[in-house]
Length: 362
Image (tube, rainbow, N blue to C red; front, side, top):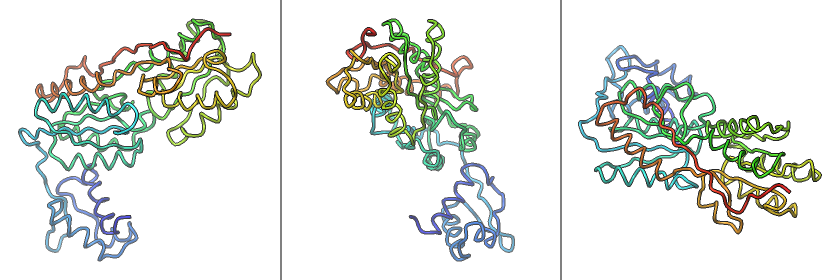
């Protein structure tokens, strides 16, 4: 854990970056800050002293400490793009980042990469870091986009500083931000429709619902049942949050497989390939076969879809294409100083990839 004065310093910086403290506004007194953070006044003085030296604050003799007026206009050509994803080195994200980097580097831009781990607090730290840098623009995947955004004030600061920014994969509902994403609802629909057309009438879906991708995929799953007049059973949908992904869906899958034949679902649609591959082990442990006893559909067409002995039927996520288009869009936003109203959302159609994990209902 960082020393106490560093913690106090970082918190005061967060007030500045989030515009909780405006330029020329006065800070609370040393006594008030020490009480707020339960630290000594000497600790507060050390934190404030560093912020004064770094130009974030200034002192007026006999009046107190104030926020310095900083020039937030971007340099004419910083040639730096901030890129924030929920993960960088896992799953489909390296391919997305590779697409962004390959395009931007050819145009002479460098990338400032960071990840949030799908944690709003880490997202706050990433935004604070980005706001302290001279950037041409920001490409960001929102964290837990299906929930209230606790970092809205940072995004408003980005807008107020007129830094072009683009959200990928999803966007916060409360923000009308430009966004490039897959049509996740259509993807969920195609996955369920595929199983229904194979004769399956008892389906189960597993969806992570603290992000908009999962919510929309679940919405498409439900819509397919309605279109084809297939009954959606009360226990058909399992929802979970990021923190529950390693336990809850596996536990629910075990319970479903324990149901007697004729009542248990014969087809599963999963939030992503990562979960689908993990559920393969649950199916094997129940001594059932895919697709003879159970058909399984993943999502994303990641490297995991073909990494096991059973190749997954899945929905293709245009990973590299999304990265390339995100880079192109960001370059246009920088050069044109904005975007047209009709371009607030660029939605890429999904594609069903049929492999070995699905077959006719038995």
